[in-house]
Length: 231
Image 1 (cartoon, rainbow, N blue to C red):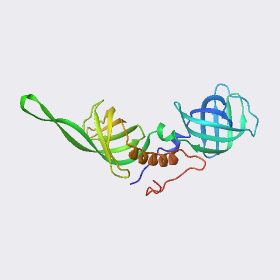
Image 2 (cartoon, rainbow, N blue to C red; image 1 turned 135 degrees about the vertical axis):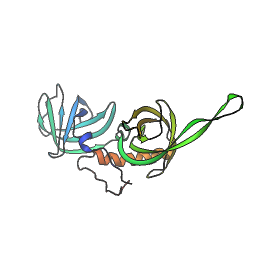
Image 3 (cartoon, one colour; image 1 turned 180 degrees about the vertical axis):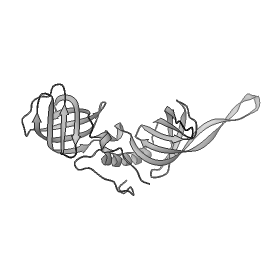
Image 4 (cartoon, rainbow, N blue to C red; image 1 turned 90 degrees about the vertical axis):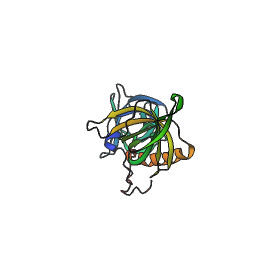
């Protein structure tokens, strides 16, 4: 199965929250950064940027809320009160990159939910398990997004099983956001992952790390083959 990652243009090249640091991890300023793949540089902007000597080696840390996801290291080429540019840039992905972002995928799974069955004596009503196919299009360590024809409601608990390319069974999910499509044929759902067993977590972490490399690694970028080699 072919797995796709969020494209560089939507994740890396636009302005993203960043922290400018010395090589000793001293914070110089908070602001935004923008990567230029063509010019092999990264620009850092803020209301006030400390002036730095040309050739000084600095770090720009990509942030997602409070999580550090990527380090860009390079030499100062331009320095002004509003902008600083690093060249000869190298980058390193951090473990936070697999926690902070949802990654695009194409995976099929099976959902299960409990629905009312036939009424028993004395008015009691049993619950039966109902299974339904789903199409997963985005995943992280904490969330899953998928489409299905089964009507689900906000706050509803379901379980998810994926057999290819991962082997994750009966993952408890809770629906956070249902979105009904105009055609009425399927709906999209964003679900919170309530728990992951250790084996399943390791498998998912390995997949997300490969997707993170493909989506975010800049210098040089990492490309996955169309047959999913390396996943």
